[in-house]
Image (cartoon, rainbow, N blue to C red; front, side, top):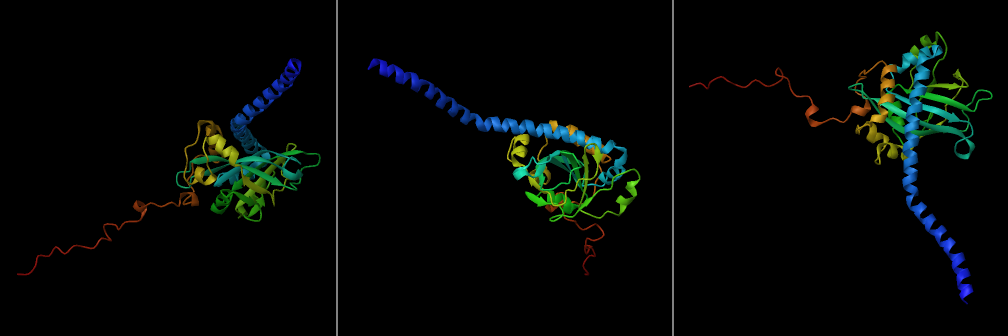
Length: 276
């Protein structure tokens, strides 16, 4: 009997240790996941900065350099992988920054995913970089939604690429202009029909609180020091702080902003003394 009890204890003890270990790991799983999301968000911001620098310095991206100066928002996906998204579609993650229409100060970033069944990669290519320029308030506000389909929910056009192509960009009248690079070649990637969705886990982890793109851009929640490099790069490429007028991000009027009558408009008081 004593031997049977010893054998049972020998079997039960390891099992109990395994159960306890799994329980501990399960309890800390959300913490580990949040830490991974925060790290992934930071890496994405850093890679987005590198992608923007590459696009802005390439000789054949003259049109990009011209258009970004008037852009109201910039979306950067530093790596879109072929067949690496949900259900075998191609996709990746990106960040979005928007310009404050009154001060010209760049706000953000907010985090998103972008995916499509057919991005049209270069032959033999398996990865690409994509930059979207939101040229209108409609383009910016579309990207503040939880999910949009490019070319369907918002107007989209491919940006011209090549030395001397800047002239053709002057006639572009569209909400969002796309630029891409694959296998070292600019252009050739179509994002028409791609779905851009908010990546809430990265937004929450990066800012340390539950936030939405609307919180980041309309409520202007405080940024974090880590984003300074990306925002400085965008500001540099876009020509510095440049107010663009009353954008939808700045439409929250306060009572004291309502126009008051000028001195000329105020009714004159009757100062004539009464007749005796």
